[in-house]
Image (cartoon, rainbow, N blue to C red):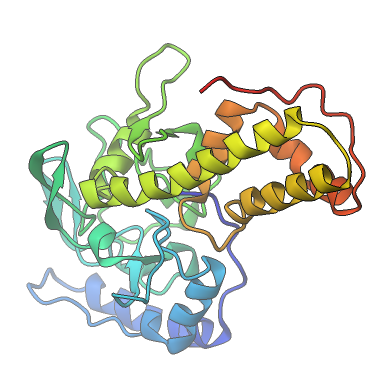
Length: 299
C-alpha cells in the first residue's frame, strides 16, 4: 500500500451524487427500515475509469495488478450499508458518503470481499466487507454527520489517499511477508495490524507474489553492487546504466508492490532512492558521479 494523491472528482459523479444525496438523506431520515437504499451514483463509468488511472490499474490496498483475471471493485472505504467494528454491526453505514469521491477506492476482490484464505499455514477469514474498526471502544457515527466530524474518527484502517503514509505503519520483508511496523515504544502499530488483518495483506498467495518481485529486486541490487566495485570505462558505465534502469523499473508508479520495493532497496542501500535519479542521468551519459557511499554487500 502506497499513499496516492487523489485527483479531482469526475464531473459525472459530482452531478449524480448531487442528485442522489438529498434523496438518500430523506430516505434514512425516516423511521428505521429493514430495507436499504440502492446507491447508483458511484457506479458512474467515469468513477471506475478514473480510479484505474489514478492507481495504475492496481488494487489500492495490496498493490496487485487487476483486470487480467478479475474486475475492479469500487470500494467504499467507509462502508455505506452497514459498519462492523469489533462485535458491533451497525446499520445503516456511512450512507451519506456513498457518492463521495474521497470515500471511493479501487480494490481487488480478495481485499474487498470476505473470504477464507491461508496465512502461515492457518486458514482464516479476511477481506474488508463491512469492517471499519475504530480505536478502543469508540463506535462509528450512526447518522449523517458533517465531514469534519467523520474525519476526526479514530480509525484504524490506513487510507491510501489519507494524510498518513502507509509506510509509517507497514513493514515488508524480502520473503514477501508483511508485519505492522514497530512504533517508537517498540510495540507493533495498531493501525498496521488492523490494516493487514482486514484487507488480508498476509494471505499466502499474495506473500508469494511479493516474494517473486523481491527476488528480482535483490538480484538487480547485487549485480549493481558488483558493477560498482569493478573497473570503470565505457563498458562498465553501460553495464551500470543497464542495471540502474532495471532497478528503477521496479520503482515506477505502475509497478506492483511499490512500497515493498522502496523499503527493500532503502534497507540494503540507505539513501540510494534519493541518489537514483542523478545516477541514471550520469551513467546515461557515461559519466560517473562520486559514489563512495555505495556499499557492497557480502552474499
